[in-house]
Image (tube, rainbow, N blue to C red; front, top):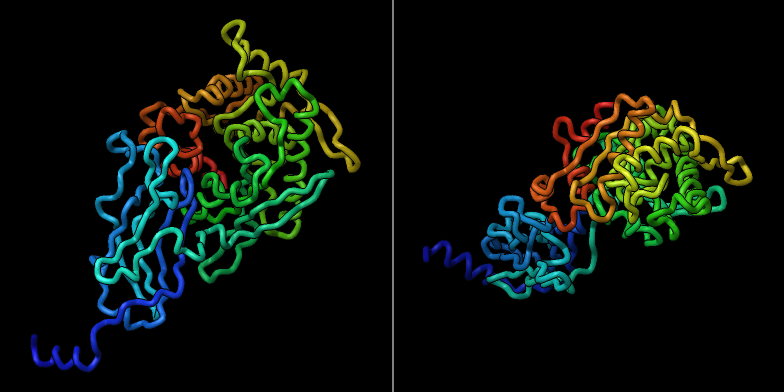
Length: 421
């Protein structure tokens, strides 16, 4: 050892073992749950962090947030390269890494092996999920979380508002309102907000658009809901509440009332259809994804002849369809504005192998609208190969909202929507 280095060690002494005061994680909403982006460790003595390098740390059981490896089509494995980088500010050590599944590595269908952070030079800096005391969620932490009452209902919501480079909220921006799926009905707001990337998709892309989602209680919306007026009335009542809240955002200049968009998946795809049937003149475009059947029975029934579903939908929209509107006292049934409805552009999204909400609904809706005069609609049907490319197993082909919310390439549904801003 050089004389100068020896004197330095003698003067300063060896790096003391860390005394951890707290561990926090920074996360983001992934396609199938939460992803960990960084781990922040606060220690009592900043000297215990000196000299540490990325090579001193290893993450285990850290896998991506996908079901399948797009390159191999097989289940995801722990990263070969954790992508760890270190930064230090005072007593806080930040360990940035390639985002990994907060739930850990999957083993079989129901077992998860927790992730771990291991430090090869100081075991006091080892971290397990149990040691985490706080979580900071990208985008969601900045969202407005509140309640809104209308038409006899009270619902929770989360609203993301884009900001400028100075951190000031932009005014009169476009708005995307997302309709939740049946798996999120009657659930808490955070479950709704983290079920998919509906609130964070546009924000992560840097698109200056507001995003809104409500935690809806819709216990009776299921296959065949169209056969029960009370079920349809509740769907429309939930939509009326959302529209009333949007009107408050328009009134105070938060969003631009001429640039309203709606999208949703599964039951939310069906609710998107109902929303557009109620308020076709208020929205600029809509994206129904793997839509359910709140118009005519399509799922859990067989066609009596090829094209029956399309015929039934066309007939419903042309002459039989009833929508409910709030008249100031109650929801009142009345006819839909067919002309405005078919002029509203829609981009239908579905997966060919979807066994939860079969693709027949998208074909029936899009073809019936075409018969009624719709000329600006688009349809995107994902093949099994397409799904694997987005990390979705064909066994879970219902998850077509994953590529929908992840894909901003030219011609994609999200880019199509943005082009109308």
